[in-house]
Length: 110
Image 1 (cartoon, helix red, strand yellow):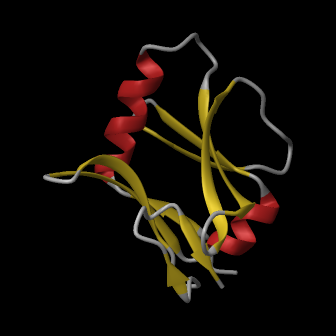
Image 2 (spheres, rainbow, N blue to C red):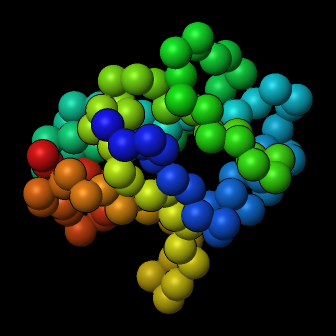
């Protein structure tokens, strides 16, 4: 596993901070990997108020993102980004471990 297993871009930090600014104190964004989706695994995004002791914590400029250790294994080397283009707005994860993906960008295989 790399030294910083998951990175987050400035665009994603700004978007997470904006989302969290409208939520109750203590709310954070949890990103996880689950089985399913059209390619085998899918990313899940949840607003939560609880943290686990072994969560990876990405925190900067009012944005806090948590990733559980099992999901970190599947996301090692990834970058979480937020894209605002002609196709719409969305969080996107650039995962070097993914060998295939789907058109929606939330499902991948390893």
